Image 1 (spheres, rainbow, N blue to C red):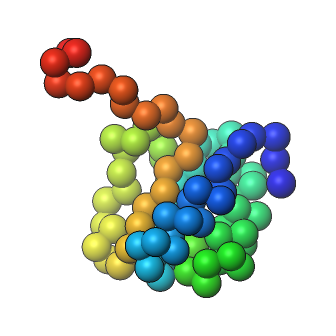
Image 2: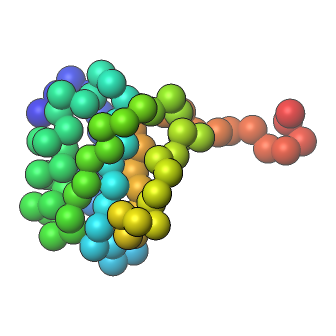
Length: 90
């Protein structure tokens, strides 16, 4: 698929545990060429409809507007670091 560790099994497990039927995939520009392969893998392993967001993606705070219109159950963002700070750390 690509040279990155995408943790697809973790994503698939999360989709299954939530019973998600419609999933939005948000990728940084460097992974967008593999978007169809990633979406196909998600759909084939979970049965969920995988939508690909091709708009901007500047971090996990850059959530697409109109998610309610898309009626997605889950949004998965790749290429972003987790927050490890607590409120007290700021």
